[in-house]
Amino acid sequence: MEHFLGLLRIRVLRGSNLAVRDTRSSDPFVVVTMGDTSLKTRVVKNNCNPEWNDELTLSIADLRTPIGLSVYDKDTVTDHDKMGDAVIDIEPYIECLKMGLESLPEGCVVKRVYPSRTNDLADESQCVWNKGKIIQNMHLRLKNVECGEVEIQLEWIDVPGSKGLPKEGMSHF
Image (tube, rainbow, N blue to C red; front, side):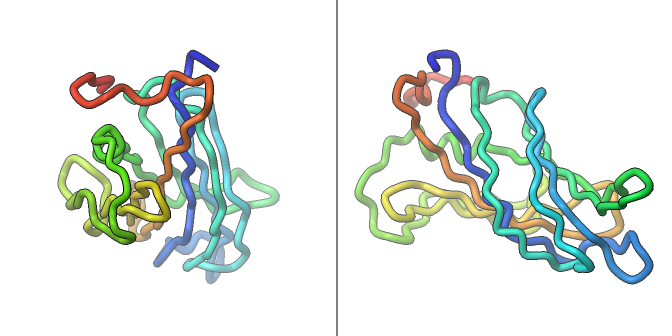
């Protein structure tokens, strides 16, 4: 328990305008990877605008380990077709958590992150105070594909007995 900092819950909410990989549609699912860990959502049949609403939880030991997100089209006979990928940049979210904020008004925006050449955001992302904790909503633009976006939400979970996040001023990035 002492070797990791906590858990990161990634809610894979939905995809939009995903690429067609079968005749008229696709059977998409998402794979989130970090180091040797790989987690996946359920498959949504025949839908290029799927609603997954699946929760995937990663144990975070090193904040510098990149988190990748890839979308695939499920095929039963051949290999799954890749439908794009993105990197989930958790650094702005972790910076918000390190501020040690408490008792903010519900819905209060703690930080705004804008799309840039250094991230895969399709739209402004906000770190928001929600039900006693900070969450971050992200619309990720998929790369290495002709079109598609995936909407996710990040939530940090402190675990008793884990190291926890370093305090403000102590960087693990």
